[in-house]
Image (cartoon, rainbow, N blue to C red; front, side, top):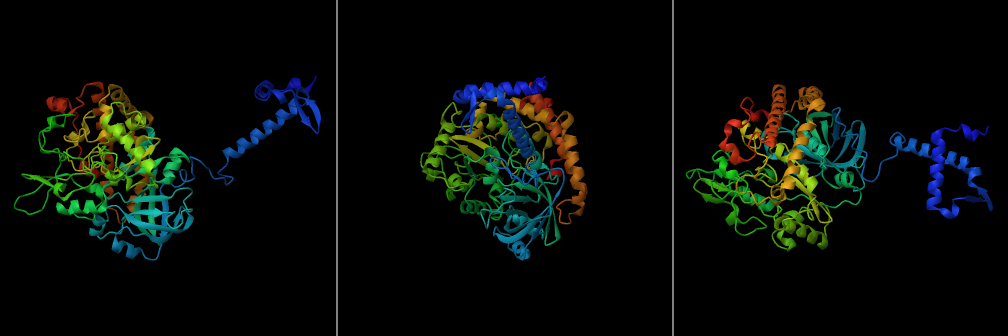
Length: 572
């Protein structure tokens, strides 16, 4: 019997399928192969051909499956750093080696300094480091535990950490849990939103302990490559220009060294106390009924309104006093409001482009902003599915220091082919911890009116969702999916307790920590409780058992979830 008759069924079927496809796509060569000028029947040599092809396929499969072991770096939309520094199953070790660390801490500015770094035993030379974030607060405490940014490509654009250009090390000064950024980025990624990778690292400088940090992937070219591939679009980080920001801060007596994201919008001043300003919970003195989406302009403002669309801060508009109220105005371009067709009207967007954008890029973005602000159908200008997923997570975690809050910042804008989407950034003040101390208010924060009174119509990237029932339905569905994401086997308690256990030895080791071990444990427990209570409230709002607007909650406060047993300050 011919050996062909003993071939496995799968092998014979594979050979028949191969011949069928070959004949279909290459008919002139489907019946014979010419070798050394002689024609040979495919039936005669088909088995040998199939054996060769199968062998090659197996070899290629082995190579691709073991590429990293063989030293082959990934290309295209994937890099090598995801499974290294951003492995969340353990705390990484980073030792920075530099000569002038004391000088850097003494100046506490954003000057880059040369250094080397050893990350999990792997050395990286000729890189740079600088201080980032709110350095004034750390400096006032006499601490050296600043937040840092490591620039692997700062001195040489060809250098990187396995494809990563820059790494942020966040000191979690306003987050006793060490988990707010980590959890939100994880939730965003789980919802399908391109999000920064985040893990944990213990930092030493010249072998001396500095402390535990959240290691965060900086949103730049390497982030874009990982999420969107080589042909990625344009990235913008809208924020006030530093000079305009300092003028605004000084006008209300605040420290000009703090980051622009820390601008407070509403405050009260005593007429007899000069320019001293006290900033309070912006909801404390406001009747909840004035927070209805699209409600008339009544009650104390959450943000002063201007009849003209200003693209930069003006001294006359920087503060408006009425009795004891002071309000700081943010530029309209940061809010993604269409102003006009002149690119110069959007300095806080184009002045903070991550890439070199040309006139065509500017015109494309302005066109998208115009559609967003003026058209009923925003789909030509917005990645609707992704933006809905973003706001579902964003509004669930109640972050006021953000686009939907008073500051209108702490986000990145991504644009490609005229389509806009939002990228998450900085959630250290999430879970109601920006200023409010009323846990029940934050736990029950209405999902259908998440904007403060006065902001409706001034946050066009969110406004369009609530204007179309199709999008509202999708927004609600995305919130249900988020709640389900941390239920069952991946219950929020299990997830966060798992991280807590991993971090305990490093919290104890950290001699520069901003809160004690006891405060850390209390913070984690509070975060778990908040998430569960928030899930209960949002589920009730989605089911119609709890009002999902400020107006409805004001009418039926007895339906709200009681969160009086937790204190939000325990997470700060």
